[in-house]
Image (tube, rainbow, N blue to C red; front, side):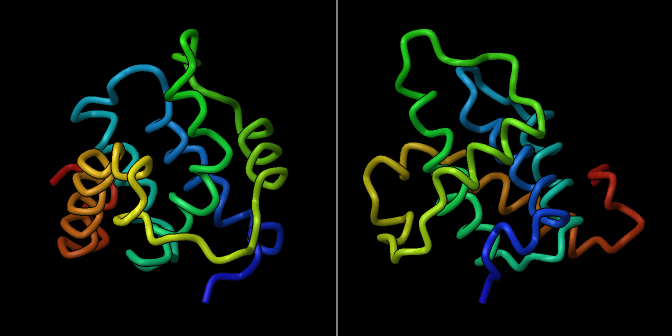
Length: 132
């Protein structure tokens, strides 16, 4: 079970920042997805834990950017990401992301990232740079 985000900021912050890129008002492309996967793969979190972080922590903080007419394009700095996630985090139960219609809008990109994470981890530590 994941600890509360505030108790694990050192490990969570790189994952939060990487995953928040999926909520920018532009397409991350292959290079962007690979970068997100590389950062997530180097984290101590399992695949299901990364799903929870993505959709229970990052989603509530940044999903509205996807629906904004003038959404953010360039990305957010670490301090802002941390502040937003801790401000919006709720430890309550949430519908699994695969069954949530709004969260499924990111399913193709997130499933691609998850597949890349699995590839990077399976290839071993020498490929943690994502160059598979």
